[in-house]
Image (cartoon, rainbow, N blue to C red; front, side, top):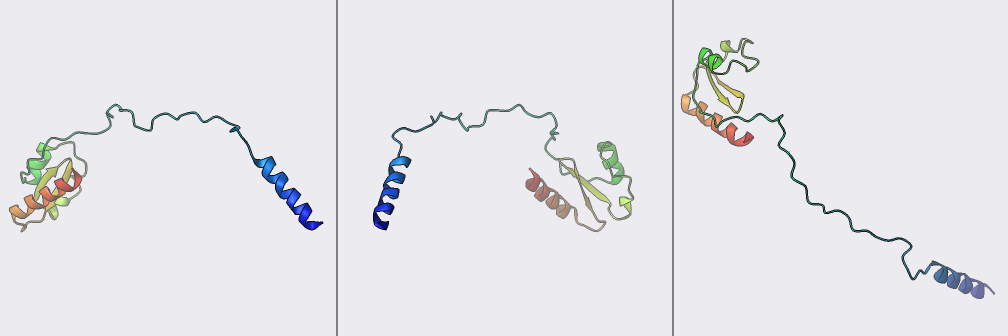
Length: 111
């Protein structure tokens, strides 16, 4: 009796779960490719750095709108280079070629 009952239940489940047609239709999705967006006006563009070492006075005159130049950093640094809006400052006995090299490496990192 048990085998007959199990066979009947299995047959009902197999026949009842079988479908000949899908119960829903699949519609194609929109393409995933990104559409071109407009350039944001929030990004600031900077010209190519000159890698010109300057004193603090020259640097303040060349870049008057940079914040943080009046914080007493002249006590520690005497040579400055601007790389894409970022100040590269060097201590007094740092050779100029090393300062320029550090500024160029930094420019490559953030470009």
